[in-house]
Length: 331
Image (cartoon, rainbow, N blue to C red; front, side, top):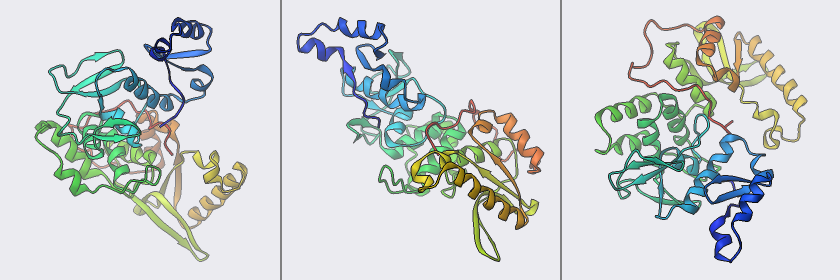
């Protein structure tokens, strides 16, 4: 989680300083008030993407709420490093009383038993366990959000140093706290999830393909030619001689992906790789986060490229439709 320092008005008051000075500094644009009584340096805040600001909102809530708050759903996911779709402003927390569903001061309370939620301490915050968090996203979020989350946890997470979960573990943890409808939504996600999905963008792409009734692609298929290995394709429709590649653009920007090369070097290498894929008999279509921001336009692009649709939608009609926003800060 981002470690930008929070400035609390309660800390100022505790040492005898006038906390109104913080309001004056915010008025002069030196500070940003991100929650009542919580400020951050404007210079640091304004350099963050919207999805990078969300963990700070969670920390701000933890610093000002009087009770020992247990964060859940999207907020717990952000702490665990589980990819989220779109941007977030609302912090989600558990409550054991009858006030579930209330929203106040940017915090939405959800009724639940902390004991059943397997509360864990993560990055200094009390959050629902990873299993419970993923099931909640599948139960109460959109189908595509659930897919992105479950695909992610089915693989090791080297950044968070976490081992993968299994479908059996997830299935076995669907307890009585979920309604029959919520349990159906979870199982629909579990039945579609695939650890072969290489990134949140690929998970979102697959979910949209399913929701729009396109033929299911093969994932991570290996292409070779007489010179040897060519590529692992993100998506392939072999009968149509068609390959699909999601391009998150991070390979052109981050040093760990550049491996000492310039962005221009990477562009040239990608062009040569694609030429070899085409020479191996595959047409190639590519898309980015921008294409995924508009699901109907993405579907139209796939159709123009020749990806076949099935007669019926590949997914059951109780799937929720989301707003098409991609997971932020993801590759």
